[in-house]
Image 1 (cartoon, rainbow, N blue to C red):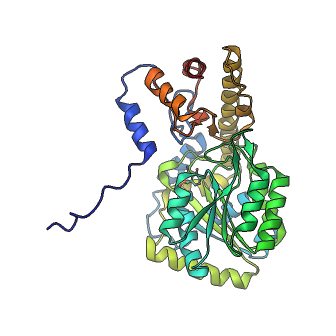
Image 2: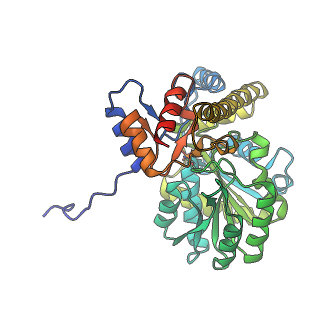
Image 3: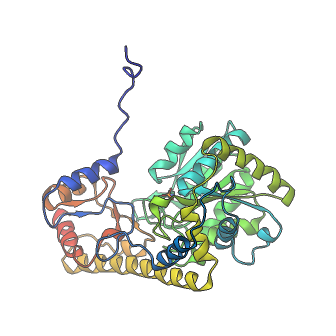
Length: 398
Ligand code: PMP
């Protein structure tokens, strides 16, 4: 009997399935709004100029490709800390932040989850309802039970504030609470500063450990404003984890560039924590890859390239906003029975459009417009060429 005869087929990734169906669709005006990446006006994933410049310099230097330290490139880790906590962060000066390079935001979450398993083996992990679909799977595979806390209120396309705070209060003390810093995936609906303050109070009172996931810094309002939650928690004196990613902000998806940062209570604590995080990394993949972090580090640490990157990031951010606004305006102008103005208030690439599974199905079957059955669309997959067809189609299925 074969070793694998009892191996069951794992459930298909719904988004990959959607992409396969999209690729097989022969209609010329088909549009894929189910994706999770930023596309430019030409419908392509951009290669940022700042990245190209840094890559030219790197190739010209013919640098050897030795192993990196387990925690990654020191200049990269330091640049990540400044981006997250601010240039003048007292926490950084006091040695209270431990940062390790990671394989994208996902890798940071996984290393953090594995470290948590040693730290709090019996903890409950709480994620927003809804959340990025990998949050649940990732923490479950690290051995934690995962619960939802209320987040999105479909009735007003906003936040279920009372439900959110109550659910956080009801978790067992010392739970791990995963929070989206900005540009919530999948809803696009973000917490405001007052929400964050209330959440902070509950987390502190319950002794919960925040795990802030920031995968879209710079895609919401600005690099600094998008880090407001991280800064607030930093000021509070709490211990917390941050997973961060440059997949979107540097358009470096496949290079796997992210970081795990852990805020401790002292420099001495940091040394012990770092030693354990390094153990987790060492036994998983030994040490991180060189290319992406070298590029990001070169850009962030050069005033000229950094200014270029900030301008390019700003262009991506403004373009998404304009697309959101055009979508709202076109839908209203075409006589949509529903008011879609909430789409313009959402942040980041994703949008809970409010479309039902049945409407999403009709969009695909009748118009070749592909979206996730939850109604999630990627606003960054719209462009001047396809937005007219998309808004025509939406008006038809309402
Ligand atoms: N967290 C959230 C909320 C995300 O949306 C994503 C990516 N879609 C990630 C983490 C993972 O990012 P990366 O691709 O860098 O692993």
